[in-house]
Length: 356
Image (tube, rainbow, N blue to C red; front, side):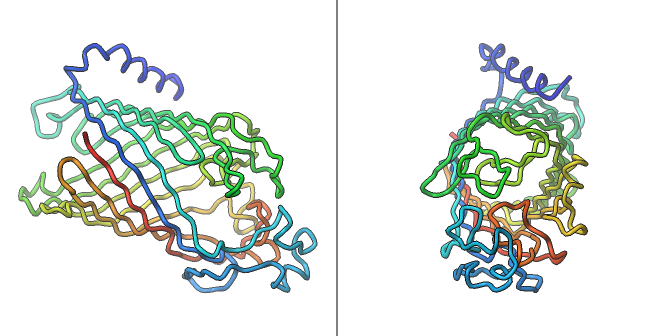
């Protein structure tokens, strides 16, 4: 069964079974996510393993390497193909969502490893200032420490011209003032989650040391993009039609207090599709199509009472340095990696939720 048919089946199952929802465990949540991104010099080759925040943007007109031999004749930042490195204040991100979950026991057994077996359906519309999409997922727990899942997400986006932001658009050249915008974006995935709670083996209120690791193979598709054509989705412009790996990991302690989780979280991303992964590798001096992206940092969840919760995460992220002759280009496919890597403070994220 294809991913698209699998997700469609899940949606039909929900609709057909809506008359018997009383037999299901229904969970509804509304929430919002906010993130602030410190400003920095966007991979300018300053050297060092840590890229520090900086609120003094670099202007290409002041860089002799760019003006003396950069792309586009060393054009200044008024040229739509060129950018300054930094905004002077950073960036923000915000989204709101509603999540519906319906869970029922499924192939449950009598033992501790199978008594909680269940089937769960999730529908989650997500709205941002530049996009709207709906996530649809099916989760099956065949044994206590394993969850199998599949899903489909469909959405669209639009530009905010006064902020020079794109929700969904082609990104196929340095100057995208007249590029194709909107259309539809689809994301389809299959994955699995391993989860473990120490308290299941060593009972005790203070023994909830938890580990969770999720691995997904996700196919991304934009209706207006051809093979190997880059596109924007929710302001990120390095997407392609193809398969990527998405790993999400967490290690922490579920404390019996108002601050009920303390731990470390991490995200891992890289291209699985060979034609994308090998198109512009680091060793070839390209933009880094084979680069493995990591985002990680400490996280805490606060129980605010009455179903309200707040998660706080300080994320760090790795990246590549690029040559001064190419880094001022707006288009990422123009950049030439030096081979050196860095870690930076990526964002401070706040996630509020209300379980109604």
